[in-house]
Length: 165
Image 1: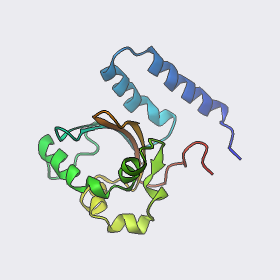
Image 2: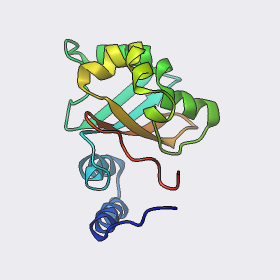
Image 3: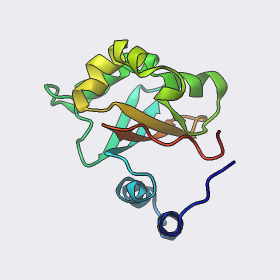
Image 4: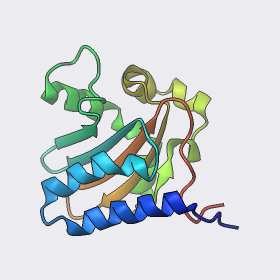
């Protein structure tokens, strides 16, 4: 049975959507999503990730700004290359590639926390930026670029996707 939204949660969703529909250009939409989505789904970090497999170009935008910058790597191009090296280990992205589904999914839907902690992806990237839990949804798979919206938390896992049991 699906839990009913509380009045304040419904208001937050409607305000978020109202803002999305009022926006006419992509940069403004991205900024709105990054700033206001945590009112709907609380998160420590919200990321907007774009990856073009043809050109290997990456774009990571986050809120708070630079929250996903890996300590010790100051150059954005090196940051992107470093992060891309570990992306094949990402369980949610692997699921998106395997199924083509863009439905919201959490790392914990695919691997235990202990197994996640054994991955180089965790030790080289997520541990260094403080991410313990992540929920992602695929916004566009084909044609390129791949667009993924991510919600990261430090302390407590994110809720399961709407409609899941």
